[in-house]
Image (tube, rainbow, N blue to C red):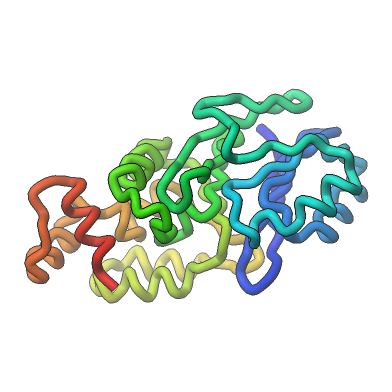
Length: 233
């Protein structure tokens, strides 16, 4: 299994280095200087640079990284669903996840998911495409990942996300348990935790369904329940 190192930059952005013993793939490398110090200190060759989507806060480090390393760039809009990216003895699988943007992708490295702005720890991204059916299918596909899958998101929105989740489910004790473990120096969750704390993964949970009914929102199908949740501010 590859090693994954998280780098914080800006107010709350998170970027990643995925590496083996000799080579590295950088994803959303806005912390370019810190990333280069890390890879150089370990004698790693940066062979690939990619992004979870094309928003500027995720691509801001590309130019510096590519100039310094001569790495190959992997544009998110051309990588195919299920494509396997091989480097050294490691393999990273591309999952296409339209919804936040049309070019949104996730990188699955071993049991770790680098999810960009599609899935945060405790919430999901804005649907800037307006394509709610596509985003719903994306959410369903991520919910089906093994429960032990580690979620490494594109931003640290944990405190705000769980504050909103608590408004929806004030009796959900898993929210406080997750906050107790939360460490801004290493931000992550698992799919199992998302199923217990993330409202947008919990559209079948009885407290959420009851809430939607009290608000007179549609609840007949899973997709209706999810779309109803998306309408709550």
